[in-house]
Amino acid sequence: SLVEEAAQNFPDSIAISYKDNYWDKEVKRVTFTQWRDDVRSLGTALISHGFREQNIAIVGENSYGWCCSFFGSMAIGSVTVPVDKELPVEDIDGIITTTGCKAVIFGKASESKIKEILRNGGLKTVNTLISVATESTLGKEDLNGKVLTSIAAMQKEGAVLYENGDRSYYDYKIDPNKLASIVFTSGTTGKGK
Image 1 (tube, helix red, strand yellow):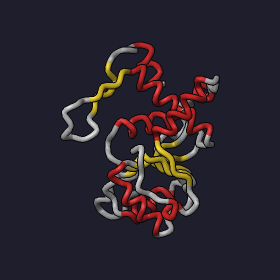
Image 2 (spheres, one colour):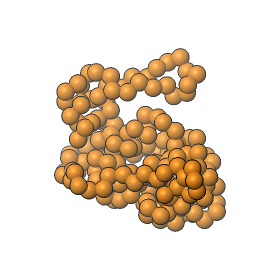
Image 3 (cartoon, helix red, strand yellow):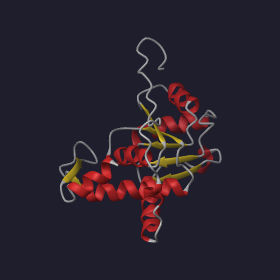
């Protein structure tokens, strides 16, 4: 995969630089090796939870977690469904439901919309919610029986699985003809398509 090849060719080079908040002075830097490890750990955990070749929505702001989610999902044969966090809740729910997503990875900026969708009985095809943030304001009463976890928890779980010999992440042969992502238009002339 792209991430694996980059880690082999440029192991100690900086892959991603980011700030947790735009006003932070500290810029975090992640090498290609660390990024590969984080992507692999997330992918391994997603496989262990049954998400290989499933549709996974990613709703939220640009972040390191978003990058890991996008590449980790694609590397295991899942179809990524990036969803604009600025869309109305009805459109977010419609895209996720129409594409049959089994999991939703969401950022802090979209958490209130996810909560509203859940309270309105939405996300009917989803069984797992994965927060980019380590803590979520979603309570058990919001989840309607869905599982809530975080990317950090999934990465930790995947790292342990990998350290204990789970190589399922590498078992997947990428098919260049297989659907990798479903992208909806912004809907400037009506609903997104």
